[in-house]
Image (tube, rainbow, N blue to C red; front, side, top):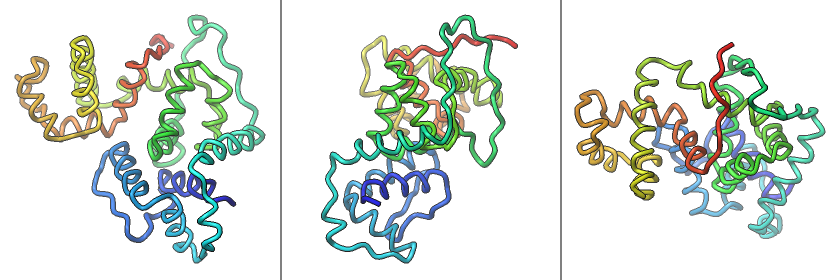
Length: 262
């Protein structure tokens, strides 16, 4: 197995919770996307070969220097494409709906583990910036086959873009009242900031920067009079609820299925 293939596998396992962090790496964040960014920052600082070596050692395996030196950064997307092709043979992708308006809402499956397949997909892609960009790009282009192959590689299950986007579009409806209020208010804040062209502020807030949020909430008309709108309220209901990616998709012009009643 090549270094880059090990790298993708180890990141996937960490995202799924089936692999512990290798010695020398520490995560302090609670929110999944913030943890993924924190991990990626440490991995990039030490280099992919060093990270792979640490994970291999945790399994009782020592890689040779020749193997480590063979890594080329451009192999990352090449290896991903190879795994996508392999994953595609494990399950037959479902056909995408021809016209979204004619489709009824899909059945939202209950999680078969600690996290649903949609959350696992997001967690895995969040561990690598290129994979996150790739996920957003496939949805933006409507590349159904590429998306389903990515889903197979990261979750070992096949589902369509429509399934994923419908799950995201209706996520708040299946949440607590507090999460619904928070996601609605924060989306309104981000919509206003987008109209004002404050892209950098949006990015800082979506990244979960506490200082930025606390300064922002003191001036935001949507939040200033809401006593419970603390950073922990935002972190618990918006960041941990994976709503930042939902807004990123919306910001990139990705359309969500209309919320249809069954």
